[in-house]
Amino acid sequence: MGSGLNAGVRLGLSVAVLLVAARASAQPRMPQYVACVGDSITAGVGASTPEMAYPAQLRALFGGAAVVINYGHSGATMLSTGDLPYMNQPEYAAANSYLMGTAAGSIVDVIIMLGTNDSKAYNWAPGGASMATQFATDAGALVDHFTSLPNHPVVYLALPPAVYTNTYGISDAVIHDQIIPILMQVAADKGIPTIDVNTPTMGHAEDFTDGVHPNDAGYTVVAQVMHDGLLRVPQVTLTAPTAGTLMAGMPIGLAADASGGTVAITSVEFFAGGTSLGVVTQAPFEISWPDAAPGSYALTATATDTTTAAATSAPVQITVAGPSCGCRAAAGRPSAGALALMLALAVVSRARRRVTASSRTPARSRR
Image 1: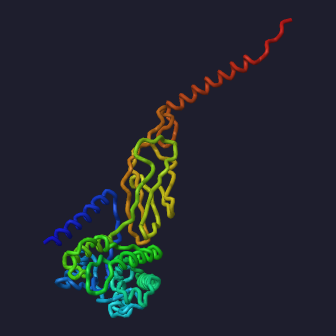
Image 2: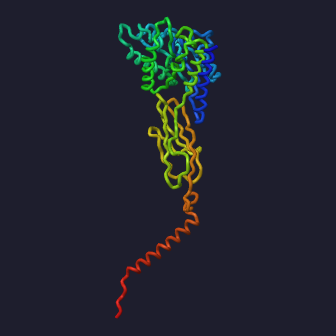
């Protein structure tokens, strides 16, 4: 009962985060097919039934909108030098075959969660020498392989869950301190997203059957984290201008901060209401709006990343006020009052010039 409560609290916090994010607008990448690549944690060891494994629960979370298939192989390693390299297993071949058979133009995602078995001493440091460099090479190669398939799937590197006391020789310290930083670096180098399963499972030994494999409650947490990770969007904030009143006739500078984490931002488009003001394809994300007519506007910025996920900032409300003298009317044409004022000023100016010229002319001497 305690583990279920903890899992529920964590899921509630996840929903709360999503509600906060919803103040802005999110346009996530919605997959049609998801291939779950991994080891026994992907396969579902420790679950009471196959339907409680995380891929099956993930499929249920998508409500039939996505086909989710389990390609986990117990004991598999990322390391090509490990005792059971994933790339040599039948699930690897099956995943390739299935993904290559998806219809052209399909939206395909691949989740890779490997590294737990790599932390075993005889895999990670055979003879005392670390296999960190080899791990990075093999992780990069697996990512490249899947991204090169015909539909160019988006590959997500999942950071393995926390590990507790176990009899398998699996090291939480190696996973947390060495393997996860490598996975993060590979993701950054390849420009692909990560899904952090490690942090939500830390401090929750009650969600594991044997210190390594989650129980049903633990797999529920993993499935929700994977679901939210697949629906990630970039972060974008409109930083200028600030809300308030601006004067017409002056260019308005718009600027935004945008980040996709390990995923590059491909564009930021600025809007006044539903009207596009311009697109910027690289940082700094800034434009100038030179001809804003008087009125009220809701300004936003929409950031899109290389996965095609997009997000729109919370709106900033501004009012563009016309000059107080009424010197400019709609469409930029002088008003009647402005024309009269301009004419009067011209007459006064001409009269002043005549007076000045007269005072400077020397008087003629009398004869």
